[in-house]
View 1 (cartoon, rainbow, N blue to C red):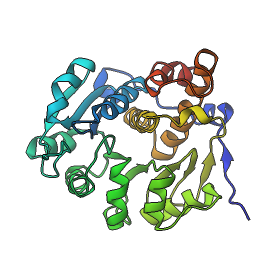
View 2: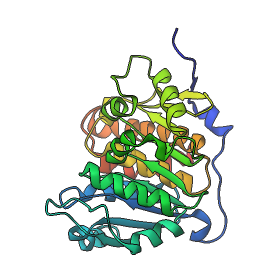
View 3: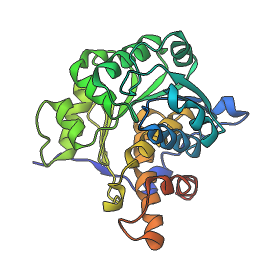
View 4: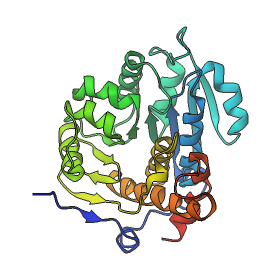
Length: 287
């Protein structure tokens, strides 16, 4: 029997209104994105700008050192630090005290966009979890999910404010098997196993078994960089004070509807992930 979930609608979201912080940028929190490699700096850029578009007050990017200068020019709103690289251009797993200090001070840490070495990512993930405060919210994406699948005890039972954003391949690693057709059920199983909110292709679940589904997403969202945008969107919503389940539901809706808004200009499958970014604030504001 299929699992039961609530459909995410504008009415549901209006009754679950996002926090609207007052005051300066500090009131909207600091997001730190840890990711990238020599060959994938765009993932960090997309996630970081999405976090700002969703309402984060301060953005910090930690990426491969060979890309830091160009990222700081492309995202002048962000503090950008370079992380040591392996010979293959991947971020090393022992980046030093500077990253640890940034994690300690951040309100939200997103780990994974653009990372390319599973062992180094595992070391980075352990550093982040060790340095992050108990109230620090976490978004784990891409290779961070692969690293977590090898060490589920990093989150299970820890009571962290964490959101996992797997695609079907990453869900297979986290589950240890191929996902079935009932993605509500798979999201619920993952949420319980890893003690985190899970957002799986628009199917959102919490560790206590609550579930929602977003039905507006279309084929166009299946484009390079789209997942990085979604991860950053989540981080930005968490930064402004949303709880993990609320942030996941709002992010799934804003991601899907931002894609819908691009269809008249580019067709169902012709838009780019970076074009989603400018649609995010309007989509959120007009719910």
